[in-house]
Amino acid sequence: MLKRIIQACFLIAGGTLGIFLMPQLLIFIHLQDYTWINNPYVAAVFGAIIFYIISFWAVDHVVHFVKWFEETLVKTPVTDIIFASVGLIIGLLIAFLIGYAFNLMKIPGLNTVLPIVLTLLFGYLGIQVGLKKRNEVLNLFSVKKKKHSEEETEKVNKKIYKILDTSVIIDGRIADICQTGFLEGVIVIPQFVLEELQHIADSSDVLKRNRGRRGLDILNRIQKEMPIQVEIYEGDFEDIQEVDSKLVKLAKVMDGVVVTNDFNLNKVCELQNVPVLNINDLANAVKPVVLPGEEMNVHVIKDGKEQNQGVAYLDDGTMIVVEGGRDYIGKSVDVIVTSVLQTSAGRMIFAKPKILEKAL
Image (cartoon, rainbow, N blue to C red):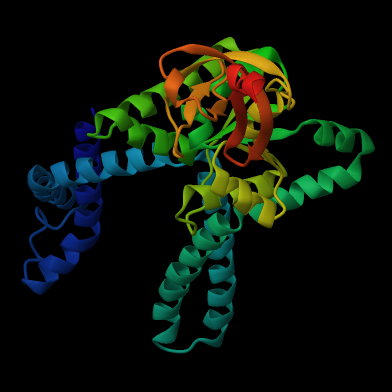
């Protein structure tokens, strides 16, 4: 269908050009006196035939270009298209006004070339400025809305955006947290995070591919099964390469909170005064409190770094270092907690076998 439409356009263009150019061509070759040739109908048919022949060679290239342009527009976010179009219109309007002023001067040569140059220059500048300033314009409009109505201000303040990063999606615990209802507000999934997940899911490495697919499954579960509002942010920050930096920028633009379990991203957010929720901190906070002197029964599974040490784990993954527990590897033993160490990586418990404690 597209191919037929393009061929029809070629015929129309050829017929139109034939009507206007054929008389000049006949004058050039001294055939203007032949009235059966020098008439609009013959000229239109002749031009249409020539362009129809040309279309057999050119139509495939035009179709390929149109399809490429269509795919590019479909992949481009709606906000980018709108702001680019508005910028182009403003740029062309400025070019017309400047060109009109120069036309009034009637400078030979300049009046012909200058409008073309101004149209190309200001059209390009309008598109670029419209794309690069869209976030600031959107933020400006949101600020104006806050000033216009106190009720809208309260609604905006209540609508807190939680922006998910790639690591917390792949981790999977975020789905359980959403299901419990402890995470309120709007869950925001940036398009560039989805692209990174898709890239990981398409990796040739089996482990990476499984992690990427797990992340996509988690997102699908959050969007379809969880009683929480989910939004996809389709914008991008083309001047920023790193995904973590884009997340920080997005959190500033949306006045949102970054949700992660990445220690480095956590620190970057804190340095830039961006609110951040680390689910590792949440996991550590809800672990049972263990005090020195408490007794527990643990299963020693391996030896520790120091001599005669044994290592055991609680059900929540907390590591227990048992002094003198090397002799109990593969066995369950009653221990007494001696100290608890809280680190950024988690909580470590130091204990001694109850039998040795009694002996002492």
